[in-house]
Figure 1 (cartoon, one colour):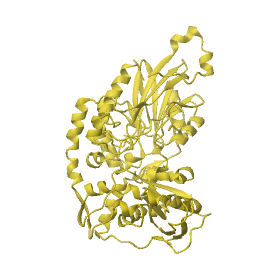
Figure 2 (spheres, helix red, strand yellow):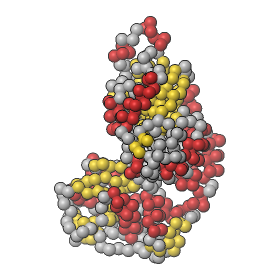
Figure 3 (tube, helix red, strand yellow):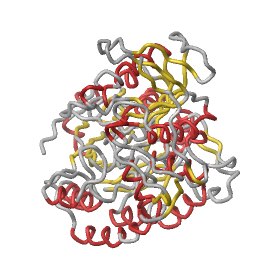
Figure 4 (cartoon, one colour):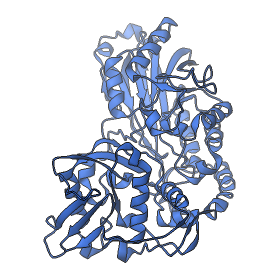
Amino acid sequence: MSLKPILLTASALAFSASAAFAEYSLTVLHTNDFHARFEPISKYDSPCSAEDNAEGKCFGGSARLVSAVADARARTNNSILVDGGDQFQGTLFYTYYKGAMAAEFMNLLEYDAMTVGNHEFDDGPEVLRGFMDTINFPILMSNADVSGEELLADELAKSTVIERGGEKIGLIGLTPQNTDELASPGPGVVFTDPAEAVAGEVAKLEEMGVKIIIVLSHSGYAVDQAVAAAVPAVDVIVGGHTNTLLSNTNERAEGPYPTMVGTTAIVSAYAYGKFLGELNVTFDDDGVITEASGEPIIMDGEVVEDEASVARISELAAPLEEIRNRVVAQSAEAIDGDRGSCRAVECQMGNLIADAMLDRVADQGVTIAIQNGGGIRASIDAGEVTMGEVLTVLPFQNTLATFQLSGAGIVEALENGVSQVEEGAGRFPQVAGIRFVWDATAEPGSRIVEVILADGSAIDPAATYGVVTNNYVRGGGDGYKIFSSDAMNAYDYGPGLENVVADYMLAQGAYTPYLDGRIAQK
C-alpha cells in the first residue's frame, strides 16, 4: 500500500539535517468498536454466510485481523496495537461468552492497550472486572472517578507508560462522559469532563519525562477534535464510539486520515473489524509530530484468514446453536411479519417491534418509534418463541438509535416512508406513539394527511420530539435522510434490536399480536 505523507509541519521544515538522527518513527495499528464480530461480516455489517466468505464476499473477522496485524508489523520495526473501545456487545458471541472471547483474541493479537468503551459497562462493573483480570494488557479510563466502585478502584488505571524502540509512550484512556446514561456502570463510577481529564494525565506524564502521548478515546469524532484543540500536547488520538471512518481514499469517509488539529493526529477505523488502522508517525526530539501518514486497511476477501483462528472461532461458535434454539418468549397467536403486509400497511410484527423499541426508551423522554418495514424479515408461529426465530425476523444486528427531531421532520420522514409503497419498498414506516393517515392516490411527497400523537393532539411542526428507530434508518437508510441530516442529540449504539424485542415479549407473558388502526389510508 502506498502511504503518502499528508502533513509536514513547520517544525519539520525547520528541522536541520544534522539533527535528523534524533527523529523517532512509530506505526500505530488500531481498531475500535469491534462489537464481538469474531466471524466475517457482509458489506451491510450483518452476518456473512460461509459460502459468501469462501467466494471472497465477506469482510473482517478475527482470523483476518490476525493475518493483517502480522503483515502490518512486518512492515515496520517499531509498532504498537491499540483499541478505541467497545469490544463488548453486538453478537451472540458476547451474549454467551461475555468478555472472555474478546480477551482471548486480544491476547492472541498482543494488544498494547485499550480504552473502556461504554458497552464495556453493559453488564456492570462485574463483567468488566472479569475481562480486566483476563487480558494481558492495560485497559484505561481517565475521565471517571472509580473510587466508589470496589471492583474497579485501584485496578482501572487512567493512563500507562510503555516503551517501544527505546522511547517512552504515554497512553491515556477516554470514555463517553454520558456512559451512565448509555450503559450500567453503577453509582460508584462518576464520569468527568474529557478534556480536563486528559489534561491532568498529560501533566503527570510530562512530569515523568514522557514526550509522546497517545489518547485512546471512545468519545466520538467531535469530542476528539475538541480534546485535541484543548490539549495540544496530545500527539495522537485513536478514536471510537461514533464508528467514524477517516480515510484519504474512501468516499464515505467523514474526514481525512489522519485528521490534524494543530499538531495532533486523529484517527478512527470505522467499526466491526472491517478495517485495521495503520498510522505512521515521525516525531522530533521534543516529541512533536513532523510527519503523519496512513490509511485504514480494508479487511476484505484478499486478506487471508489465519487457519488456527478460523478453527478456534468455529469451536467457540458450536454452543451458539443452543442459544439460537433457546426459548425466549411465548406468543398466544402467530405474529404476521409478511413482507407484503409490513411494507404496505400496519402489520402485527411492526407493532410489536415499534412498541418494544418505544417501551425500552420511554423513560428517556422518547415518545415516537419508527421501524422500517424492510427490516422485518419473517413471521413467528404461535407458541414458544426461540431466539433463532427473533433473529430470523431481525437478522441485521441493528441497534436502538435515539434522537430528537422537529414535528416537521417527522412528517417529512413519514412522507418518505409512504413514497414507494407501490414498489414494495422497505421504507414503509411501522410506528408506535403516533398514528397517521395517508393518501395512496396523492403524489409521493404529499401523501401524509394527518399525524396524531398518543394524547390525541395533532403533531406540532415546530415542536421537538424524542424519536427511536434502528441505527440503519437513523443513518439515512431506506431514504430516511432527514434522520441523518437533522437529528439532534443522536445516539446510534443502544442495545441490539433483537434483544429489545425478545425482552419485551418475555415481559408480556404470552404475547398477543394485534392491530389498532395506528396506520390508515384515506
